[in-house]
Amino acid sequence: MSITTKTEGNIHTIKIQGRLDFNVQSEFRSAYESVVGSSKFILDMTSVEYMDSSALGMLLLLRDHAGGGRATIELHHCRSEVKSILEIANFQKLFVILD
Image (cartoon, rainbow, N blue to C red; front, side, top):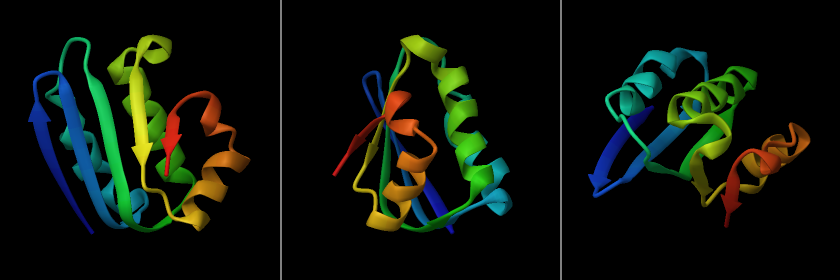
């Protein structure tokens, strides 16, 4: 699992590779904690092979950090298995999920 970040202006991109689960909680949190103010977050999920329920919680914590309902968070390039998990959890109501 690896997480890389890139910031351009107020757009903060987090690229996740491998499994998004409890084992990467600290690394994931570190990827966004330093960002303050109103920012747009893009999560590049192209290489996410698996996510569990703790990953859903991590996404919610990111949303809270980014401003809750005022936050703009986009999940890009989710594999069908990951997208199914997000849809079952109704995360399409909280995040923008793009192919």
